[in-house]
Image 1: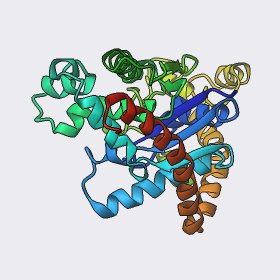
Image 2: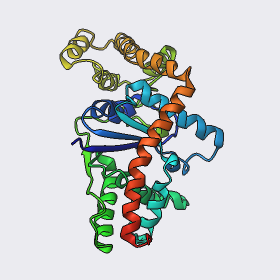
Image 3: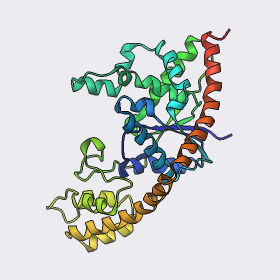
Image 4: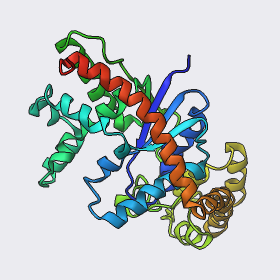
Length: 315
């Protein structure tokens, strides 16, 4: 029997190549190994986006991104979190067994506190909604980067607590699937590629956008090999081939950047075209989300019956 995988992406704007090589590429490989649920985490997104048109556009954007990179709706359920009411129902049940000091340990809360930002209840409480996301589907694995391991730790703690309090074996213990082989992708300024730093190369960028961003990559004039250019290029080419190119063009930053532009265009263009194809048939995309939601609902509804019985609200 196939093990179960759950992953989610918030609909918060355009993905970049760091998102792709950090996680999305692995989703495509993993859909063949696991019974997979890929969620558009729109209720999580409400903590950041509170505009109807923007939210609708971004939800469809994530669906298009998923399909463009090669996720197959015949192999995996691609669905909207908001279509499955069991997510928020289970979150409430988890809230009743979770303490405030425990939630104050979350990285998001600590970060906001350190920056003296007034945090909303949704952001404070998001670990429990995330625990519900994971545990509703009896997920065996949750693919995360090392910096996101805490999300799965919250879910694991909740399994132990719920099963102990309600003297049940309702929930299965999920494991983080740490994507170790993935290096941190540098942005054009040398920091980690991140929307918040404004240093990204969009995953579905036009040729002009690719050229503009690559030409803006920060280089160290004291080095013959521009390390930030090389680090991004290493995502696209085998090491031997890349080393030969950089050895033959030591100090020729323009030549090396031009080579990166060419390779990025060759890499991005097919996915960009695939995305456009789906963009021209939004009804089909909505139908894929509807069917994915139906698959997810069957699993989530069955699990919630077990949960209601365990907590004693089923008579």
